[in-house]
Amino acid sequence: MELKELGWSSLLEQHYEPYRERGFSVGRVTKEHRELYDVASASGETLGELAGKLRFGAMGRADLPAVGDWVVIKEESDRAIIHAVLPRRSKVSRNVAGAVTEEQIVAANIDTVFIVMALNQDYNLRRMERYLLLVWDSGANPVIVLSKSDLSEDAEGQAAQVEAIAPGVPVHTISAAHAQNLHALEPYLVQGHTMAVIGSSGVGKSTLINALASKESQRVNDIRFGDGRGKHTTTHRELIVLPQGGIIIDTPGMRELQLNASDDGMDAAFEDIAGLIGNCRYSDCQHRREPGCAIQRALASGELDFKRYQNYLKMEKELAYAKRREQQKSRSLNKMDKKTERRSWDE
Image (cartoon, rainbow, N blue to C red; front, side, top):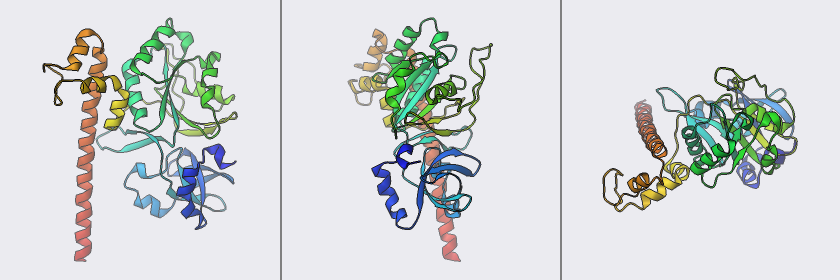
């Protein structure tokens, strides 16, 4: 397979050049196993394992390869040794659940992210706002795919509600199971263009990928009668090259979406609220009872939906908490480094 079919670019070529001169090859991670990776390169598919220097030098999971990453490899008879990860131009990531703050990369080097939400019991505007924040912060472009339109009594009305909270973001209403409106996604299926598909469990991500790939590449289960949702089938991230062009990354359903976005991501996901804040009379306005508060004025007039604003405040607090935990982690690591340095001097 040619590298350009996998998304190779001139910028990646620049990053790779120093390694090429030393006899290394390059490939793209298509699937992640426990400490092993499937890697596609110009010479075909191979199993890759981490070089010791890369494994032990990593400060966390984010320093190790993820699906979509371009990696520098030395190819051997039965596998490839991964020596480095080329710089990422974008990454969809979240914090892993639990007491320890750690970034988990869902997919790397993405151009477009399909946020899939089903128009049945899964339909939730507040959850969509969280996904939009995740994608805007990634460096990729969000595209909203409203699936299972055949199960909705008012697909057009629901699409209009989604468009209201995602100004400027393309919104496509489809039914992959019945091949309805799939042609709307064809402009994204371009050679070298990488897409990731994210969404909750059972929204039809695997069905969508099968429809785009024109084959049963991903296993699909039937709908549960209790809640109208498909049974979760994807248990790992996987990169698939589509026959008509383009690369798509399937991801497991996200049952819990822990955020680690930046201020830029918040401003992009809540552009309307950021604009209102800029119109407040006082720069330090707390948006409560201050005179000239644009937020309170918009809430009173109905220009700003109260539930949307409440969700904004909730995510703002969540991100502030995640930032404090990350700072505490950095301070702890710095203390450990200083202790190690002093110990080496004493020895």
